[in-house]
Image (cartoon, rainbow, N blue to C red; front, side):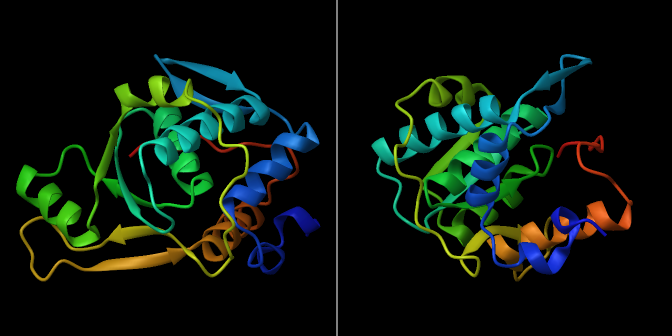
Length: 190
């Protein structure tokens, strides 16, 4: 198994650190579905947009380890928003845009979100002043809350996923699929 796909290697990483190393290395472009036709974007372009989102969130007062809700139908916008939240030092809370309004409201209240980002917000935020110094995060810091309770069920349950765990899970998936450097997997969103 190549080192880049070894899950244990990635437990000591953060998502922001992984993005920075991919962008700096000139890694292959990623494919994100958009408008019906696949679109190819280089990691450096995704990183630049995410740094703009991070800078805009900090400018609006995002605190370290503060939860930010993401309600997205577009894979590219959702990915850039999530990376921006992580680079700003926040915690991503993914909302299902098709879930009932009361369920989404319960998730927002449970995670104490002041910010809710929608697909339409991402271009404006990405064009903001890029964050110069990404947040100082540790692999054990929470990266996202995954709400696991179905709509209408109480109490609302959320699993806290760390940066290191998400990096290791991604590497583990790559290893399980026997992907080699530069190969990609198409994923649906949300």
